[in-house]
Length: 451
Image (cartoon, rainbow, N blue to C red; front, top):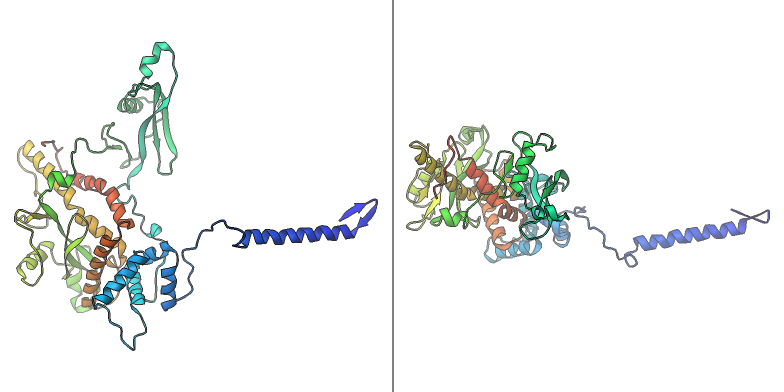
C-alpha cells in the first residue's frame, strides 16, 4: 500500500500485487516446466509402486543402477541371459502359465541376490549392505603417509641442500591424511635433498614433533621409500613379475571347500551342523585365476570334512571331476593331502633355521596364489547373499540347485560383464589381499628371503 500526496493509493497497491503474483507464476514455470528449465535433475533410483510384469518392464526401462542393485547385471546382459535360456530349452512356456521368461528370471535373480522370498524383496542400497571396497583388507588402515616436494627459495649459502633429485629447489613435506581427504599431520621445513625415510625417522624420534601414532593394531599405508613396521605398512620390494608367474607357473587354479547356508528336517539335522554350530552344506569347488568356477559339487552335509569330500569325488566315476594335465596341479590348503595333482602347504616348520625359513617362505607364496578361491567365493556370496543364509525351507535338492545356479550365474557375469563392481574391486585390491593372507602364514620365525 502506498501514500501519494497524503492520500492512500489503493489502485497502485492492486497493480503491485498483480505484478507479484505474475512473477511467482513465471518463476514456477521457469523452475518446474521441463521445456523451459533444461537443467538435468537427478533421477530417482527406487520409485516403483508396480508389481508383476509391469514392475519388470519398469525395471528394464528404469534407472541403470536400479537393475544392477536388484539383479547384479545390466539390461543387455539380463536380456542376453533370457535369450540363452529360451534358445537352449532351459525355460518352457506353458499355455496356463501367466509368468513370462523375463519375469521368472527377474524374480529368481532378486531372490538370489538379496536372500528373500518371492513376496519380500530387499531393495537396500548395496553400498550400505556390502561396503567391500576396503573391507577386509584395509580394515585396520587409518590413512596414508607420504612425502611431497613443494617449491622453495633460499640463499646461495644453503642452496645445495634444497636441490632435489630433479635439480630444482624445494622443501620436502611429510604429511598424513585420512580417507576423508583431510590432513591429519604435516611437517615442513626439511630440505629437498632429504630422504623421505630420514624425515619420518626424525619425526618419530622427536618428542616435540606432535606426530600421533596410530592406535594399537592400526597403521598408515606408506610406499616403498619407508621401512615396513607395525604402524606403517609398506609394499613388498623386489618382486619381479606377478606372483603367479614366479611361484605358480604350473598351477591351474585352486581347490577349496566352503559352507553355504542350509535347511533340513529334524531327522537329518545333526548331519548338517557344522563346527560353528550352524546348519550348512559343504560345497567343493575349483576355480581358475580368472575367478571362474571350473567344477562344483554340492549336497554334502556341513559336518563332512573337506578331505573326505575330495576323496569321495576322486573315487566316484560319475562325479565329473577333471584332473589337471600331467605336471599341473591345483593349490589346496592344509586340510587336504599333498599329492602330485594337489599341492598343499607344509604342516609344521621343523628343522634348522634355514629349513624353517624356507618352508615358511614357501607357505607364504603358496597362500598368495591359493587364496584366489577364497576371493572367488567372496564374490559369489556378495553377488548372491542367499548363500550366506539363513536359507529358506526348500527341499535339499532345490537348495543344491540354487547353489549350482548361483555358480553358473557367477561365471555368466564374469564372462559378459567386464565392469562388474565386485570383480573390479577384487582386481584392484587382490594384490594386497594376497600379501595379507600370505602374512598370516608366518609363525614362530622371521622368514629369510632365499630367492
